[in-house]
Image (spheres, rainbow, N blue to C red):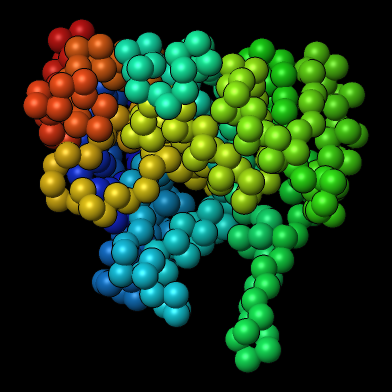
Length: 356
């Protein structure tokens, strides 16, 4: 098979973790006889520095012409610490989502047996946790009307959703639930927000179309508590943009490390596969960042964008073996003195794949 991908390393640790993920994809493609072609694009702070635009037209064209996008991370402290900055790296991410029509972010949350002791939750609470969080990605408060009035002393951000936007994300949620344990949790704040009442109204209309799926409704504050108290109770969770942003980061921590979870952003055009952690600028260039989430995102890309299930499974097997062997970076190593570098973890996984 011919695989044509866009590679967007981004900022901070992005280039380092992307290099290892790409090496893993190359190894799998070589082993399985696939033809891999890829081109690099710029996005985020590095794109602002180079061309003044966090998501340049050339990068968008590259994404549109590719079968899939493998994406690293964006963000830089020089923008975070300047509240008056007119152009920000995150605007590039929002623009990419909007232009590519990436209306859904899919984040699997699962625990790893070799890392249960790293979770902030007790082992008996987190063991066996395995759910998918589906976040609406192109609507809500992040894309609504915003601005300042009263000489800048009053600020507003508007949360807006259409019925069509809610229907398509709920449909995706039900489709995932049908393939899993047939339980869907719709998270909203319908007791306070009119936009949430629309979500719940649409969900109640759609639920009878999926009689095999148990649909439950949960306020976002309750969901935040239950992810901590009973994470194993969830199967598929679907929610709006800002709620999903917060809840998925909370959920990622219970696994023991944010450096382990991949994600996919899917929609109208090319899908984007990325780790859920940020650009971690403090570690940039030090060769200490955990590349496993990006490597697992590559596995997700092979499975979802190319239907290469065996290839994805081989990468997952290699990642699990690296954790069992403690061939990991310092953030999840039991013995910090024996922790491997970013590149050494990537090499370990490539070697595992080559020997299979």
